[in-house]
Length: 434
Ligand SMILES: NC(=O)C1=CN([C@@H]2O[C@H](COP(=O)(O)OP(=O)(O)OC[C@H]3O[C@@H](n4cnc5c(N)ncnc54)[C@H](OP(=O)(O)O)[C@@H]3O)[C@@H](O)[C@H]2O)C=CC1
Ligand SMILES: O=C(O)C(=O)Cc1ccc(O)cc1
Image (cartoon, rainbow, N blue to C red; front, side, top):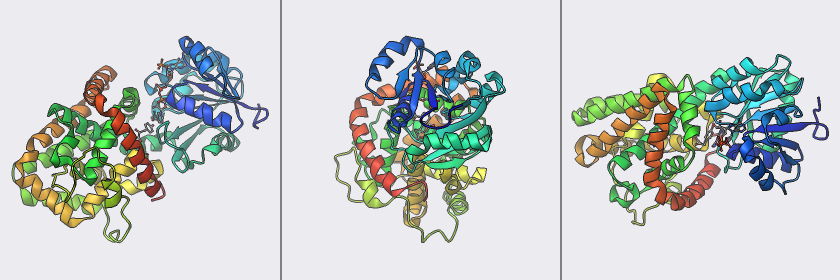
């Protein structure tokens, strides 16, 4: 077994966006990479990597597995069992195997089921997309069936990313990422669903101009412009995600009912109690993750913004209610935070740490009827996404996702340019250390 750059090589099975990013960065750092995708992609992949020094493309996972010392499965979460069943027995004797899927329960179960007992297991998870610079972003290691020495070896391999190493069990990883990823996505997926249902590109309406709205719009479009299976996999396959997404949908529904019932005092009382349990007293003096001037710079709208137009902010009120009901302190989850989660927490905190803004949102929710139909559609959408995840049906998830993605598709190019810039600026201000 080789354990140095000179005598070890790394296998990557699944050369999609993440697999390619890993292959590129690890070979740039001097490691020898053996990689494959599906057999039908062999020729095109070989051409694509022809000039990348240190990367050898193989026709299938058997050929990768038998010669590599650390083998990383970077395939869709929904097919991990099938793919490990296919190639697992070809793993080199004494090698270490890991996966890069976003949900560890099915991945580790597949390894236990299909890998020979002499093979060690160290999984990982980069908590960011393929186009984000890994420097400073969380990178989770799961030392599932491996010696400390083998964990160290995997850490050495991935050290050139400059990511922040986090050590968790598979179960802890899934519980935390259910919140930082699955619920966060459910909220933005629901926003997009509601805008589509009301046939709105929100930035074309005066109601959606300004700071918090820019973040909502840019992230929603960013999610819908990505691959559906990433979001479906990490929600449907994560045992902790269903319950958390269901609570989010329940919080949305409960708060909406208080709004349309005109129950101002109950609404204020419930939301402020939730806020007090999430944003603990004493933290008021702390710096906000996001500030006005940052939020305002990234608008898809060409309308001038004088004062933030009031909004009921149902999606934000509900996430705080949801965290409070589940006893989640989101700041404790920074160790597994993705850039999107930090933005989501940032806008939520922005609303809840400004009493005037929060009171304005709560009064708007009760008094201003212009938001009723948007909030109604948002409520339907949150419940529908929750059902879709609970039923565990990948095809209906795909169908819902792609229908809405199609609606926003003409706007993806401008949203991507602005969204990337926004992410870059905001990420500089909201590291996972916050
Ligand atoms: N995208 C992201 O932001 C992140 C994704 N992840 C996780 O990383 C994993 C990969 O994601 P990503 O790269 O975005 O997805 P992609 O769809 O881009 O990549 C997955 C690749 O695996 C290939 N594949 C499927 N079956 C096999 C097989 N039997 N042998 C070899 N290759 C196979 C797929 O081929 P085909 O397309 O033909 O099926 C595809 O090229 C997922 O589990 C995802 O959850 C983790 C962090 C971030
Ligand atoms: O930041 C997010 O939530 C993303 O959408 C990108 C992403 C997707 C899947 C992961 O496992 C990690 C990051």
